[in-house]
Amino acid sequence: MNFIEQIIEEDIRNGKNDAKVQTRFPPEPNGYLHIGHAKSICINFGMAEKYNGLCNLRFDDTNPVKEDTEYVDSIREDIQWLGFQWAKEFYASDYFDQLYLWAEQLINEGLAYVDDQTQEEISKGRGVPTAPGIESPYRNRSVEENLDLFRRMRAGEFPDGSRVLRAKIDMASPNMHFRDPIMYRILHASHHRTGDKWCIYPMYDFAHGQSDSIEGITHSICTLEFEVHRPLYDWFCEALRIHHPQQIEFARLNMTYTIMSKRKLLQLVKEHYVNGWDDPRMPTICGLRRRGYTPASIRNFAETVGVAKRDNIIDVSLLEFCAREDLNKTAIRTMAVLDPVKLVIDNYPEGQVEEMTAINNPEEPEAGTRTVPFSKELWIERADFRENADKKFYRLSIDREVRLKYAYIIKCTHIVKDDAGNITEIHCTYDPNTKSGMPDSNRKVKATIHWASVQHSKKAEVRLFDRLFSVEDPDNCAEGETFLDNLNPNSLVVTEAWVEPTLTLEKAMAIKHFQFERLGYFYADPDSTEEKLVFNKTVSLKQ
Image 1 (cartoon, rainbow, N blue to C red):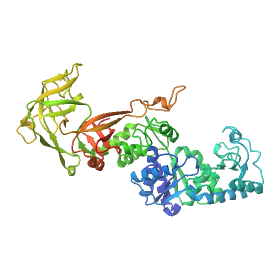
Image 2: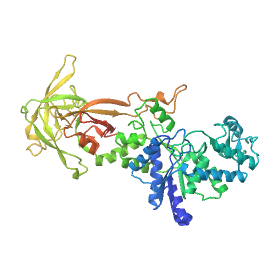
Image 3: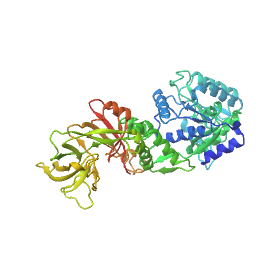
Image 4: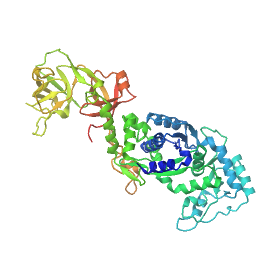
């Protein structure tokens, strides 16, 4: 049991909040969700589900300059794709009228004032944690003057940045968030939901706790960076004498070879270092989805990582492991050759074609079988042949035998090279008695390799993805460098492959997840057409 569950169960035992559990997931719609958000989604929705409670989706849309309905739609899609459904959908902007009334309440009670200082002057006046700040010269304005100025701010009389509304708390507090935090700023910008109704917008710290209160949230679960905000969260709820949810913080998710900053992810997109938010190299949920990660693999990853009180860095290989674990059970097997060299079976009858029976998924017998055409000329992986092989190389070499998967044992006799010395053909003979059901079908050889019929296989595009960054901590940069200098120049390699003819566009888009036998797990990309299938490599078969 993690510490969040302990807190909730203690509250239930004590009858707090009538023993009810109400959580919420409150993203700001200023970008696409990433794997870190997926952990938060799993925690908030998971806690509500475990304790028969409810979880709301609330968009923290208090900054109209950065927010967009595109992000709202993507967030909804990502949550549902992960397998969760919110009880109710809300927006912080739903509460703008109530928040404004509460701001006036604090002014009337002498707990808020309008400040005419610039942002630079306010920041300077706050000082440092080890010494008291300097009070604003406008801190002791009368209630009447503050109300008048605040109402005129709302009416649009003043330009952006000319005035703010601040809470009057304690300029000597060691917690910098207590040093008269800004509650409202002037921002003449159209909002994606309220249009031009407002030209003042509440700050996160003023909107968040009150939004939780309005919705009857019992446990406001958030990441660790908001721990220092909790006293302010509590102060506003207590000063306004409203329902007071309990804020609980957990360690945010950090992963090797990954950045989680929305600002930096946006930079990657806008400056075309990646091909959009759903680029399979991105840590966004839509990027992971397009790469071929499954909802179950991400949920299992979040559960495996667990809930901690201290920030730590998770190795990205754990996420890859969770993908393999799930895809091994669910992905349909198929054969594909990515780096082909022609194999010619000299003693195989000219023009003969056999239909070999192949297993769709050995982990799931109900997945059944398929047939794959076998002919005289095949494609095999170039790496499966070595002209001068040592004893540790068990695959094909001259005078050595291997089994062709689902088919026969073959023995290499000779090779053909071009003028540059590159191998163009590998010639072999086959033993017709080694096919399944034949007398020598159980004869043992040291290796089995996959193949594709030259005559029947289809050409496809395969996108091989590696980690987007070449170092474990992309933000750890040398002097004068940025995280962009740590980008991996080989994070995407596009190649052609030969795949089984059973892979039609309809089948690929219906099944989507495949194991290319002996190569890895692949996902049918939406770019696929009748003329050309496109597959993204999700993960290799082994770490």
